[in-house]
Structure formats: structure tokens, C-alpha cells
Image (tube, rainbow, N blue to C red; front, side, top):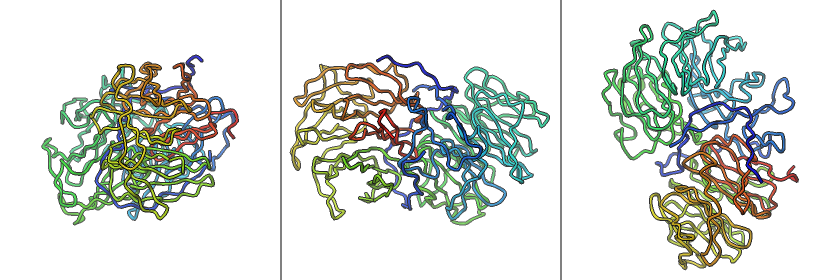
Length: 594
């Protein structure tokens, strides 16, 4: 096999989606959003899926994201959270929060009680059906503006949608409305990035040139524009009248999109990866208190960055790229610099590991809801276990069908029929599988620790199978393991990006180094129990590769955008299940899939 160079029509996006299913402070759980079962550091190139052969005049169901060229179709879902990847958001004049849900392909409207619906114009606005909204803003007349990577749209109060002419972004970062009701937008190109102002006559004026990766913006109460750049740590302050640019803050955002909001007192809030920071207009860090804890600081893990917006009570709505939505509720609404309590509005869905039984039941570890879930082939979902604490868990089904879970506290447990669990081994693992010999094989080691493969044969009975293969250490980065038919296992190490084979005696060899497939950071890997082919998704190009046991690769699907963390192949070898932000994809990988 040769690696294909097929491109579907790509847009250069520089989105480092470097999240982790790591430790977070427990949050209240709530009901998982309605599902639609089985229906339709580096700067990566992200591909926008091309349209199916025929597009209905008005969709009745939001399109998927993952494009499968061999099937000439978009993949379906096992489950799809109503809110998938929240990007920009704003408080509307009607008392609702509006969220641009990029992968969900719609603008979500949220009431303070947490109920959600969406604006229906996604059904007929074709450009948004294939590249979802990235930001949202209102002018003083109540007109809503939103953009994807190539266009800006205006939705007026009568529901009419107009695509604005004269837009020059390639791609567009985000947009905002000034106090004078003027539309500004960012061009986030690496070369030629800029801040621009749109004129209703259909022209764009460049306010600031040479702003590579120009991203998110907000106007302060004094009329200054604050702006962030992708993969740049600083916040800039722009005088839009003169074009003068100064650095407002040096080290805030990190290698992730960075979102901004202004509170009623005029303070600037920045939402970077794992961080939420408040600044005075003079640039001084200003502590704030949530549930008795002072920030910035521990213990809350703010996770990957997404939109933030203040409501009319001074409450701050906070989203994460992994699909959750929370609100900092002021204890005394309207009070200057209030203390807050943290409320979960929607937990979304963040699955970090998957496994499947021969009957087609899919098992998942949901870190947002802190639960172990089972999805049946008919779409019904069961909660098998409420973990009661946060962190990333591994999952594996034994030959007897018993579910084993690697808990984030360093314990492996067996799920019992009565819903309880019993101790199996004291080992820290995030990836584990059963071998044909009936033993459980686990990648052992916490973050930053040297990894090894352990063989577990009974309660607290285990030994080390391997810590290196062919003289090559497994390293200290994350590692993945999947059965290689009946002969052993495939092992992938993220640090060096090596794909190995190892047998049941701990002997093996290097199959290939996969660094040339692109991307950096986390990956997912799973092998077919029928063919032995390995399926691999790098964190970067978001392409699904099929790799044969000799290391040859080909591209089989595109656009797994939402931080894929878990993956498994069905027992018949026809379907690939991938967990990403807010969804579990069901991707056909065999000509017999239907």
C-alpha cells in the first residue's frame, strides 16, 4: 500500500488542540444530552470535508464531520452531545447565551437554567453545514454576526441570512462589534495575518497588518481593542483609530486559542489553556474567588480553552474545547468584584478510552460525567459506574465479558454485576487490553514516568513483560497498546512516535516510526481483530491512517477534529469507533460496512 496524497479541500488552521483527559475538580453531573445513535508543539493543516454528492435544500439533521472517501459519505455517530466544540460566545440582547459550536455546525442558544436550543438557519445556510461557526456577536440593532473560516454572515431580526461581501480573511479568526457598531474581524493567516474593519459598502480596511495568527478580540469599556494570536502567549492592545499596537500582557495564553471577555467593571478576563486570569485595565493581575478558593492558582483545572462571556448579572460563562459549559455565578449579582460559585451548565462528553464486546456493545470512560458508560447497538445508553472522582480511566473487557477499569487513583478494578467494583491490581494505567491467553496487559506509569508493559494474571499478581523493545525504551511519554491478532500486541509511544510489535514473551521489533504522518502530541491507535491492520490518528492532520503490519500506510478518513482520545475496531472489522470532543464517531472501514 502507498500513502495517499488525497486532499479534500484544505484550509490552513493553526489550532493546537493540546488537551488532556487529566485531573479536574469534580463537578456536578447532569443528564447526558440526547443522542443520535448510528446516524448520519506543531501547527497542523485541518481539512474541511467536501459536500456529499447531493445536498438537500434544507437539512433536517446536522451533518457530521468525519469524511470517508471510500464510502463517499460522512461518518455517523454512536452519541453526539448537543454542544460539541464551543468556540466563541456572547451574551445576547434577549437574555440568552449564544455559542458558536464549530464541530456541531450550529449556533447554540442557552438559557440561565441550562436549557439549550439552536438557531435554525444552519438548515439552509450551506457554507455553515460544512464548516461550522467560529464566533458570534450582536450589534445594537439586534443583528447577529457569525463567521466560519471563509465567510461572515449576518442574521437579522427577521431571520434573513446575508453573506457579507468584501471579506479578506484567509482564514478568518473571529469577529467583534465595536461600541460604534462597526464590525472588526481577524485574519489568522501565518503570512499576512491582520486586523480588519468591514464597511457596509462591501469593503474591508486593514487596521493592523503583520499580525500572524490573529485570533480572538474584545473591546474594552474605554474603546481599546484587546486581541490574541494563536500559539502566541501575549495579549495585544490596539488603538483602532490610530492602528497603534502595544503588548498588554506578556505570558497569558500559551499554545492554544486564547479567548477574552470584559466584565462590568472593565476588567479583562483571559481564557487560555488550563488558565483563567483577570486583569485590571492597567494590566495588573486581579485575584478572584470561586467556592472559597482564590485564583489564579489551584485546585481547579480549567482545561482546554474555549469561549467566555459575561451575562447581565455579572456571571461568567466558560466553555472548554472538550464540550463542557460552566458558569461562574456571582454570589451577589451586580456587586463589583463578587465572589463566585462554579455551576456546571452542561457536562458535555469527553471519552478517554473505548472497548467493545462481540455483541456490539460499546464501553466508554466519560471523564466529564465521571462515569463508565455502555452503548447498546440499538442506541440505548447505560451508566455502569459513577466514579465519584475525576481523572482519566482505562477500560478493557475480559474474555468472560467482565469490564476492568484502570482508575486515575492507581487502582485497576473489576465491575461486578450489582454495579459495585472489586480490587484487581494496584497499578497506574491509561491503556490496557486482554491477550488471547486471558491475561490483562497494561501500559504502566503515570505522566512523566518511565513506561512498561505489565502482565496481570490474577488479583495483585503481575509481572513486567517489557520496558523496552529491541533495545528501544518505551520512554516517559504516553503509550498505547492493542492486540496484534493472536500473536502479541502493537505498542505506540507518543514521545518518539515509534510503532512496535511485541509478543507474549516480551520480544519484538520496531515496525515504523510514524513521525512523517504529521502532528504532535496525543494520538489514538487501535488494531483490527480481523486483518491485523492498525488504525492511527495523529494529533495534527486529524487524518485516520490505516497501517499494515509491515508499516505501510494509507489515508482512510479525514477531519477527526475534536481531540481524539479513545478508539476501538469492531469485532467484525467493519467499523472504527473514535471518541472525540462531544461525540463518539462510527466510521466504516470495510466494504462490507452498512
